[in-house]
Image (cartoon, rainbow, N blue to C red):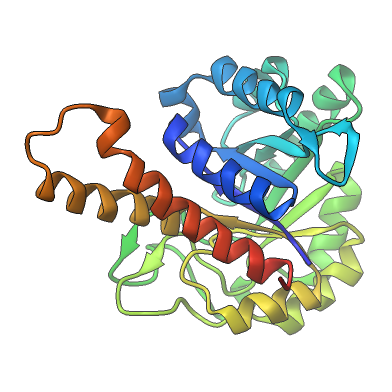
Length: 281
């Protein structure tokens, strides 16, 4: 089984993700990238998620708050990580995949040390390997991304990186890409590499760029050592496609709570289907 991580940038998407998890009685991680949290508000999204956790109870233990967690996804600077930590996020990701391993290690370690100084329970994740940056429909492999074995994350490098930085979670490059290929399924995931990295690194692994990955690859990746799966593009696509249809059929409707409802339902279905797959339901 794996925990689903879904990105949001407004309350419509947030309710879609939460509704799906709540109905299935599953824990959920809400992700907001730098752009998403700039749009929705850093402290505002933290407050909303905390309110959901407080208002709803864990269906498996009524004495505990609902297991919904907030993650500062893809943060490219120490300052960005610090802002999320100070705002009360449950988890943060420093994405140093585009810089040298030396710089990535240095900044990641600083992020870990700062998070620990504020709250020992904050989870810090980092990335090794370039899988692209955008969550959108792609015509080809993202520029700068190589899927050759020599460019994917190496188990021995992952082990040293985890040891040097003290991170809690690692997001490796194992054939996954950000975004979603227009022509069909994304490249096949190297599940054997996942298994080797998990054993060498000794920390739970996170699969980024999950949108477009085949069901079979998800199942095998989870069996091999993936503990969290990130989905964004599939949710955004459902939002946009449903909204386009709704506005086309109701051109005079101007009430957002009316023309956004079908999009909420469409996103909820995408999230629900993925959660069922990740948890073998």
